[in-house]
Length: 163
Image 1 (spheres, one colour):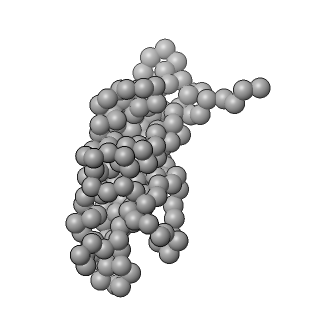
Image 2 (cartoon, one colour; image 1 turned 30 degrees about the horizontal axis):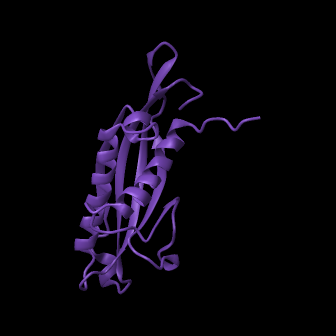
């Protein structure tokens, strides 16, 4: 028996992981190649290469909204968290460059619609949302790194078996 198709929510998360690994890691239009990218979360004490990105599912809208014949829209919140090391004694510059790398890569993939797995094909809409950071607190605490959380809001469409 064949393995069923992953839900679109998981396809979105897997695609963001792929974008961070392959696009940012191999592109000249980006500041830093990731030291690692995972689906989930990692404690800073286990990380040896920076920047380190973690992609997590934050949740979905309360209920999918009907939008056609057995079709529904659902809004997902995806979080791209990151650990960055110090650069010239501070974390702010590298942190903001990493956030820009992530935003650019997700935006480019959403606009491209290239390939069946691009965010422009999987999702109806993909928006860069808020970003939060540690404000340099972890650097002054002697930890030697910074932390950020970039939120991405994605709208997917499908029947109950696809979402």
